Structure formats: C-alpha cells, structure tokens
Image (cartoon, rainbow, N blue to C red; front, side, top):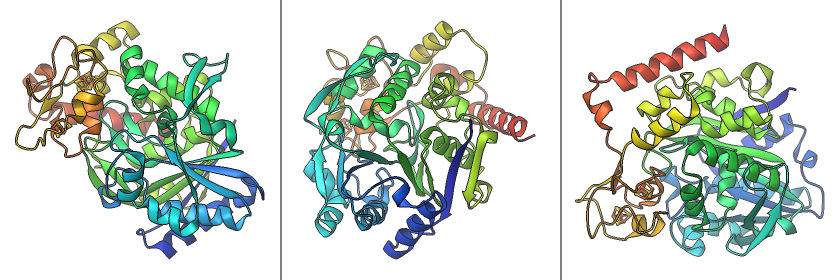
Length: 399
Ligand code: SF4
Ligand code: SF4
C-alpha cells in the first residue's frame, strides 16, 4: 500500500498567500473536486482547543479555515465548521480563535459538538459503541484541519489525534480516566477515525507549537502546509519534519499496528515540495524519560507501570495561577487530583498523569517538573538520550 502526501510552502498567514498555497496543495492531490461534490454538506474540523488567540499557535489558524472553506464553496458544496473545545464555551472560542469572523464572512454554519449520538462499529477495539458529536450522521464529507503541535501526554498531536475533539466536552476526560494509559487512548483515537472517516487532512504547519504542548508550548515557524487523504501519512511526514520518530507517538503506533493508513516513510509518495527542506533538527519535543523508554523492547505491563509512576506529576506555578479552577474541573479523578485551593501539587496517589489540567490551563500555570529519576540523572541526560535515539532511528530509516 502506498499513499500520497502533498506539501506546499507558505511563509506566513497572509490570506492571499494561504489561499494560493491551499489551491496548489489541493491541485497536486487532484483538485478539491476529488474530495467534494456540488450540493454536499462538508464539515470542517479544525483544532479549536480553547480560548487561544491565533498567534499562540494552539489552534488552527483562521486563514487556513477561510482558504479551505472558500474553495469548497467554489466547488458548489455547503460548509459547516465544528469542534468541542476543552476551555471556554463554543461561542467565545470561535470569537477569540478568529473563526467567528470567517464564519460571518463566508456565511458558514457553526456546529457545536455538544449534541451527541451513539455510533457502533464492531471492528473497533475500544469504541465498539461510542458517543460522539451527532453532526457526523448529518454530513457527507469530513475534512480535518489539524495544527502541528507537541503534546505532553501523547507526544505529538496532528491529523489522527484531531478527531479526539469529536468526543463531546468533558467525556474526553472520562476516557482518560477509564483507559488510564496513553496507548489505550491512542487505540480509541484510531477507533474514532474509523467512525468519523475524514476523507482529507490539511495540516496547519505554517507555525507549529514546540515544547510542552498542546497549549503550554511556544510557537515555532515551519512554513508548510501538509495534505493527504491518508491521515496517518500526514502525521508521519509532520513527525519527520520535526525530527520525531513516529514510533514514539502512541496514536501513530496504534494506526501502524492496525493497518490504518501508511506507517512507513518509504511507502509515501511526496508531491509538491520535498519535506526535507522544512526539517527542523532542534524542534523542541516533550522530553520525558518514558518517551525514550518507549523505543526499547520492554514488556507492555512494564511500560504501563513506568508511564504511571515515572511520568512527571503536575505542579501549579503559584504566582501564575489565576484560580480559574479549570484544572480542577477537567481532572477526571474523583475527587480531583489537583485543586489550587488545597495544594499546588497534584495528588501523588490518585493522579493518572493524563495532563488534562496542563492542557486546559489558560495561562500556562501548570508545570510538569522532571521526575525524581530524571532529576538525579546527570545533567541533560534525558535530552541527550532523546536526541541520540531519535537521530539513530532516523539515520537507520533513511539508509
Ligand atoms: S493552575 Fe491554571 S487552570 Fe488551575 S486554577 Fe490556576 S490558572 Fe486555572
Ligand atoms: S491532576 Fe492533572 S494529570 Fe493528574 S489526573 Fe488530574 S488532570 Fe490528570
């Protein structure tokens, strides 16, 4: 099996630049008409994590949504746009992320993912029966518009993980609690993709997020748009650009062993620009010891145990905290493992290291300090080991 991934350069978010880049991107894949037909209802699923301005690089940029929506309309289809943000109500998120202006200008239909429906699929591993946003029963085509970002729990978030946003509201936190490990969560994310069936992914990698993403990291300019009908292949290319072995990304690993899309770089045909010209060797990844150990052939029960006990425990930075209580509200444990009215540290016994608190803190007031083991390691050993393993794997794959 082979897949085609298209890459197009885009220096910035200037609206004309992005419109033309999206046009080129789609033309190299056969044109927008290959994905949508006149009269169809097309749902765009950007990453609308929460109340973040576009320049914070936590959400898909509105210039991309504008360019994609306009070209779908020009093809004669109706465009809807939706997500289930973790922070803030849907209307506020649309306004702050710049989506409302696009919705108003192009007269799109905004869809809150709160109304839910049951979906069944016996082929699924975890979500044989799962509640997702009801809208998927009422559209013809789904196009996912992910943002390239690092992710404290899942290592990376891109095309495949973007569909976790189809789970309504705080149900996401319930799955974190129920499934406990990120590997099981990754299997659920593949299940959701099998149900939602996005027919195209267009990734916003003009400015990505590096460091402790998906909301607490820093913007990093990359300058490219990546698109394919194969979402797994989009993620493989994105990971290659930021020098992150996809094997360390749980959702890419889950997709690979389930045969969902292409997992091997050598089975991907690139059209447009070559990905190597966008490669950033020093892109800051999430450097936790458990991510490195994932590359070793350790038994799964040992990996799960290490993930639970060797992963950093969230700690509130007191002078940054605005006491909004979002971290306590999203924490899936009962009672919440984190509560700024009681303690700055997450509870050691109950915290499941899902990092929902870190993801949804609006002011980057939650730190993920190094574990005891990482602290007593010789200085810089974790980043050095990470870099060493990553370069070794990448060299092996390219040879
Ligand atoms: S740590 Fe963040 S999410 Fe929690 S109360 Fe403080 S500001 Fe709000
Ligand atoms: S304290 Fe944070 S990391 Fe721990 S269980 Fe609660 S939300 Fe998850």
